[in-house]
Image 1 (cartoon, rainbow, N blue to C red):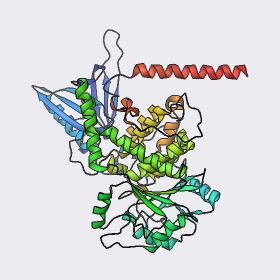
Image 2: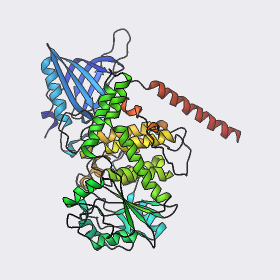
Image 3: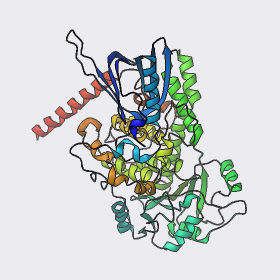
Image 4: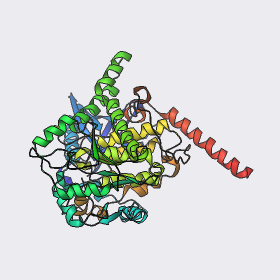
Length: 533
């Protein structure tokens, strides 16, 4: 396929670009294989020209067109939630532009997306891909404990197509047992270590549901694996992210959950978390409410409540706190799973680590966490982030699970303003890049797919770019906090993330100015203290 075949009109003059809260810009619109560009026409009275729009076409979520007389208006609704309006002279040009954007934004081949063509200056393709090396992280845990070892049972992705090639498992459990356990788990996701809590030696594991089925099938090797996790008289909790009813229905379809008699020492909790379509619909309703300018207070609060988004934030944080509490206060091991183990499971294991581990609250540590618990853990970014809140296509696999995680982390940063090394801008950048990015970090659904597409050989990693931004993504108030940060999950403690959901609805420059001032004050205070010493 050639991109030129999809572009019906490459350039149109006298196009007017309108964006909420900003003056209109008139200029020349150009379409390339991956971008929409608008360069403004310099004004005759000394006004500045060349105010450019540089939009990655992959960022377009929905296109709406309206034709009137000899011209037309195209509204572009983007995955990062911004809305752009283009007034285009000439009906044919308007239809051609809309058709070209629709075709280019829905190219299905991963290897035809922009990351495979993007070559920024001063960056080598290999930079960043080894920055957060999973193997070294696990090797350290194995060395520190002696009870855990690296396993290469999935080196060829034969045991589990959504796990990375290297995982960490109990030393006592052999490779053959892992393969049998994988056959007994949905999608082959057998229990593996997610987090080792240095304070007391407890661990958090994650997996998918066991394939118990209506006949209550058992797998001795799976039972042996979980038994090996509990040393001596240790207790364990299975934190099930489905309701008891949903788990029961899953058993009738071949899935299910661990039966207490088969897994002595493990006690089960059900903490249902929404995923899939209900979560996507919640996101859509919230964005609709935020974009409606006609609200009075009652209507706004009613729509906010009807979206249930803050309810999902509350439930995710509560469940992560429960997992953290089991480990830190009860000194018990935890196994987290739902059905597939690629969505709400990762939401809980990742959030629990931000709560428990000060290293995960640093810029580098948080990036490592995203690599381990989202990217290499097999969260299907390609499926979940195919569309955002505006798309008109029939939803299939979309769900903003990763966005929900980022929102929960933002809530933690708001409640503990000194404890996260990164700022809101960093979380916003991660949201944007998870949906549409020039970098390859969030491409595909798992490591197996990334290997097949040569993502690490043919695209750039996002991390070097993020790390090159200096203070832009750092929290000026950060001070290392070695303690566990227990958030309040009371309804009145949780707020709408305005920096994301109202980002394009109203200007944030006053807030940006305030943060800039805080940065200056912190810097001058630090310089004064150095001078004093």
